[in-house]
Length: 104
Image 1 (cartoon, rainbow, N blue to C red):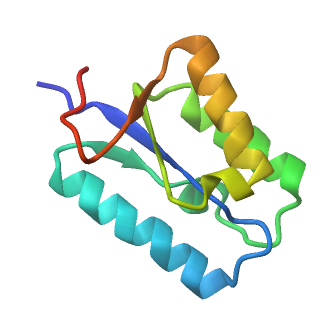
Image 2: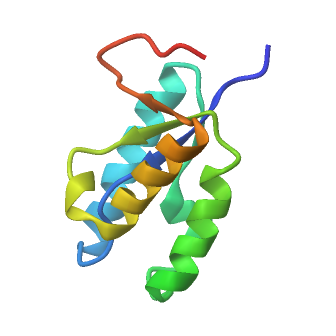
C-alpha cells in the first residue's frame, strides 16, 4: 500500500536557521514513524536565502501533491503557513492532527 504523503507547515521567516531546520526535521521523523511519506518545506526550498515568493512557489507546488498537511504549533505566526492552510482547505487536503488517527 502506498504511504499517504503529508506536508509540514510552520513558521520559517525570521526564525534562526538551525532551530527552524531542527523543528521541521523533528516533525518529519515523528510523521515518518507514523507511516507517512513526509514533505519537509525546508528540504523543498533547499536555501534559507531564497526570497519568500520563490520559496512559497516551491512549497505550494509540493503541497498540491500531498494528501495531508500537518501544522507546527507556530503556524499561525506565519503568512506562508496561513496561505498553505487556506489552500489546503480549498482543495480538500486533509489537516492532520497527531492526537487523532488520520483518515485517508
